[in-house]
Image (cartoon, rainbow, N blue to C red; front, side, top):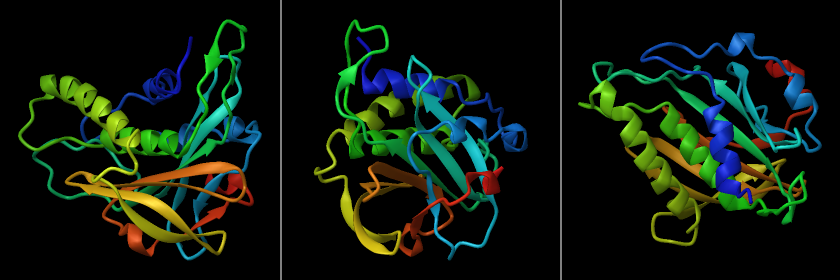
Length: 222
């Protein structure tokens, strides 16, 4: 039986390996997977005039695209503890709103996706570009595993004290989001009127001034 957490963990594991301070090879990513999605993609609205770029899509066992991310601003890299400067970026995660359904092999049920799914993916995404100060390279994997479990617990409790409510425009309509900040950046998650859940994470760019919109042409990000 495959759960949402297992599916998303596998998708995160498929992200390209990143060494300390090395930029992600977004220029080599293709738009093909995004074009296969049976749902609309979301990104920052036209008020954002900076660079836009593709990241990664996540698929179910049968190859169906279930979620993916688009980047805005500086392409983030994992920084070592000696590097003080931080890029300014915001990543938008789009998650198909799916009900509980049978797995491709018919042996079990896949958990329904929800706003928590978007919050989880956004939280783990932020962690993937985070290197805590004073941490040895050999300890980061253990730290990342521990923080990933924490991100899942937080995403499963969106009404808890770690989250606040933030209203931001989505396709021009004011929409409530669950929002939290940490020393590593910010994470938010909500739903759209187009049947998808939207998560986002970033650093160096204030979440309070962002707006989201359906992407009319995903190839413009390639």
